[in-house]
Image (cartoon, rainbow, N blue to C red; front, side, top):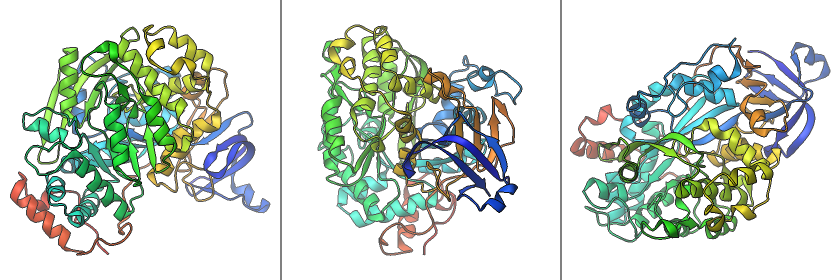
Length: 553
């Protein structure tokens, strides 16, 4: 591996309380290292970084980049270009921004993330039965380290345990299935609502205490059970929650109630923009923002974190483990729709969608996301996401950064959207502008910390040598759209729009084989419990499930 000295760059490393300091950085053996003695510095190749901004590589903690749902979305929209990325020597816009922006191929996904200065991404919704094919796909992801969360909120084994009130069984199940399937964290998606939809019931739990069809439990109990299991195991990332009633007017009440249900436990709330609506029923005139009461709660509860799921205008694709939501959106838009039922684990819904600036609801969604960014006081509780591709492509991140850093640009865009947004959103009154340090937090340091990735999101000794170098510009969108250089694992892989090195083997980010927190007990029995259950209920043998026998100390 190469040894590098990055000389004279302006470093933003909020995790180490470095906020725009001019200093040298040293990279060796794929890591950031402490400044070596002067006599040893001769073995480091120097790059003059004066006038450049240096940040850790970007970390996207909630995206949809691999697995069955993404591949179906690619196939159901053949009209989208499938142009592969170039290999250097082309103009910047040719390979970084061209081709299928909504659901790019796995190769283009890695290249396009790299082209923005991102080096780590997590897929937020993988069914346990799908992990073998998903891992095979992620191993083809160039330049990016990647992990995934397991869909568990409608898993029949968990619903059974919650029905019995058997917290110990739920904890053993979570410990076993995360390790057996290589998952990084548990994911709740519309807990109980997906199961209701499968049984031809309304696909949402309007009341967290309403019974789940076929089980003697409720969404609230499922949330409590999985959150408690994650707490007992002391997972690096807590339960990752897609709340009930996504996208429906008045759903902020469900979101607030879900936050309160955690009762002091840690929890991460995904794509919070889609869960922050006032109003009721299908009365569009009543649709409004309810960010403030939710932001007040987050601001007073440091154990809660969020990612935004920002909407931007244009064509994209809705894909979700919430198949009831997919059906609802397709009925509204008249677009094509795909739904599937994954064994006894989850569902999936996919439909194209186009967000329009002159559509009142779409414009409100755009404004509500920005309200969240500007209302959360502690940026360490927040991560920049678009819920790619649900709100927009991840390629829109530079535009979001400009909206956050430039209030005058934000006001210009506000004048272009549906005029009633001015009446139903607090955005016109929010003048806050993000600093470069705060951008480094919400795109790098905070998501890495929220995921418990101690070697990501910072530039201290021992960190992965994943770095992005930008050329400062008044137009922040242009600045963050085209990094000057990117280092991955200590190798210079991108400079001035040209790829300089082949991708290193993808690193799949999983939990340590050791148990997290206190042992839930019965070290070998949880495997026997679940494998016997698989044999009774699944359409395949237990030895075909997951990626390998679980590792138990």
